[in-house]
Length: 109
Image 1: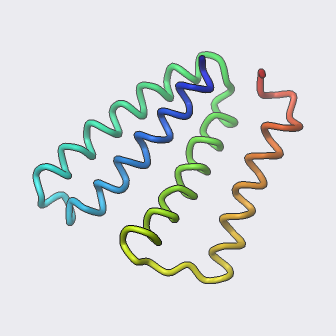
Image 2: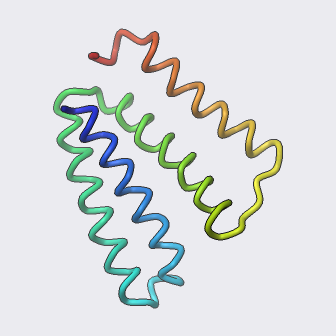
């Protein structure tokens, strides 16, 4: 169940960050409220995950996948460009998360 919570926490973090961009510096009320709610849900779920998964591993997965998802949303929704070094860096983040999940004995599966 903790992996489901982590996945949903990542989803809400991504929603919150997307709304943060849409809030125009927290000057638009609806997106600003969505930022607060989405981050609150994300952190609450992350806190539940930390009961089972070590903080360093959980945070690496949460933030790493959040970074990759937000970069993809920035590209698709906001028309932001990703150059080769950015894509390489994102690939390295994904590879790091895969190494943690596939090979680390720190993560309880």
